[in-house]
Image (tube, rainbow, N blue to C red; front, side):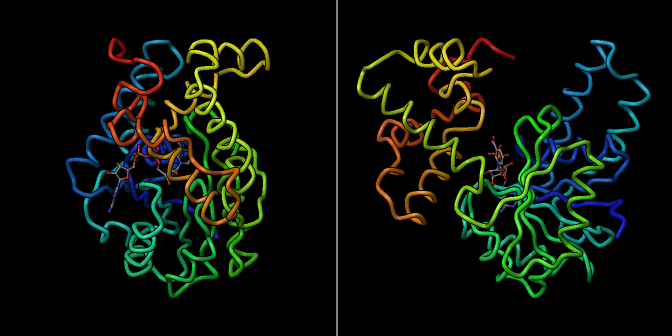
Amino acid sequence: MSIEVIGVVGAGQMGRGIAQVAAEAGLTAHLLDVDMATAENGVEQVARTLSRRVEKGELSADARTAILSRVRPTGDYASFADAQMVIEAATERFELKAELFRRMDEAAPEGAILASNTSSISITKLAACTTRPELVVGMHFMNPVPVMKLVELIRALQTSEATFAATRALAERLGKTVITSLDRPGFIVNRMLIPFINEACFVLEEGIGTPEEIDAGAKLGLNHPLGPLALADLIGLDTCLAIAEVLHSQLGDDKYRPAPILRNYVAAGWLGRKTRRGFHDYSERR
Ligand code: NAD
């Protein structure tokens, strides 16, 4: 199956990144959020990202215009009528995603693939919310989507080989390298990453080091490009906490219990870069 038109549900940092890389590869992307204004805001962020690339001489102004013309904001699921695939990239909460999958299933044409960009939630459970479980798959992009090369693909118990092959072909067309994970909480990447970030939160909470020291420890001592607290701020502390809760509840091992400081930051609304305050301060940045 050739995929030329996609729908994306959720115009946050991941959804708009997915719409952007799809449009750069020549696909049309309908970008949906709770309402038209939020979806339009997502397209404006894509426009800003592309403008920066034009300023740096990496992209022509004509190419920017052409890419942007293929990202279509919408608040209405009826826009997905011509899509061969719909990718869900909304907030990391099972009940919300279950509801979104029911709506995607109603709106998408027969035979269209329904994918989730979830970081941790069972694809098998999401597939079971639809009338087309064999067409449901996990397609986990990394952040920032235009920069990061990896896509982790997850087969639900019900996913057909044809669905998996078409999703792999799309990921490769978007210039990504694919790894395949079993459908287990956090898959491969977040099963490793979130306990690391959570431990960094405990290190901070116990006063063992400052945020700067913890991040320098990982950057200069482990050769990581970004320290765990700076990475948590990039991901969003709400998303990190939601993933940690899935690991803890679904794997049933207290070693995954979220650090109280992470819960407190989320309760305070200090979610990282997206609110300009997290473990680090971003109030001065554009
Ligand atoms: P975000 O907070 O930036 O964006 C979430 C978006 O979902 C918002 O625009 C919100 O308005 C929208 N949304 C909420 N309810 C909705 C609804 N009912 N209908 C339509 N849209 C709705 O979050 P994000 O970082 O983009 O994460 C989105 C998904 O991608 C999550 O499942 C997350 O686990 C996953 N993910 C995140 C990262 C990361 O680094 N942040 C990386 C890989 C995967």
